[in-house]
Image 1 (cartoon, rainbow, N blue to C red):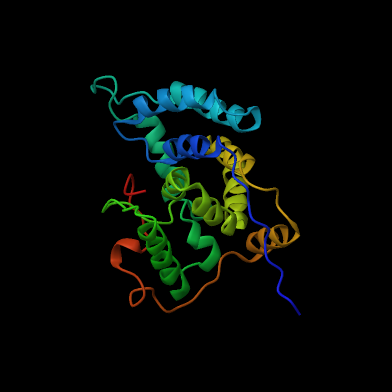
Image 2 (tube, rainbow, N blue to C red):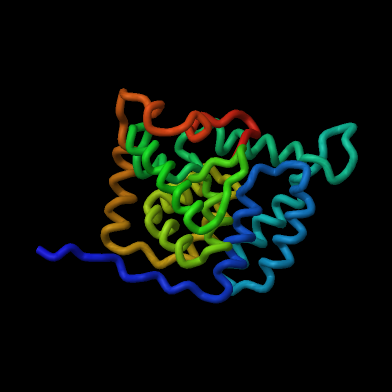
Length: 231
């Protein structure tokens, strides 16, 4: 039987701009966040409504929440939003922002997936910073903004995981669910196979394996993020 292939995903001219905005908003809210938030809000207003409106809901929430800690000058790390980010993404496994987790769980195959991602970036002439993990959604979106053809393929390959993350964030009433709504609006609708994969992930969770990843990936790729650590 001939193997069915997924039709090519045609990117639109505004997709790179959308993915760059989403990448900024899904990164850890550090000292540069206030500046990035203002930039993201301006850029979001130039996007189609289904993509822009969820982003603007998030930026409005972030603007209210991103207050500096007592005693710190304006423009420094937004303490309240940063704390919520850590609680959401670092302490809740079901809201994991590392896309290979949904495909491979904590198995040896995940290590190979991480290496392949890094090789894909390198082939496109794109080098990660030392503190960046290749499968963090913010990193994948940033790459997609720089290389839409390859980046859109990576995003659609992880379509089921992205949908499960979106649903988990929505269930938790996390503000980043709005950003995932916007990401979904840039991607093809879930097809039958994707829906089946989402249902299976939701019911069974990612694959599990007792053998560690150490022989298959460098230590910096292993997914055990610390509070406010690398994205």
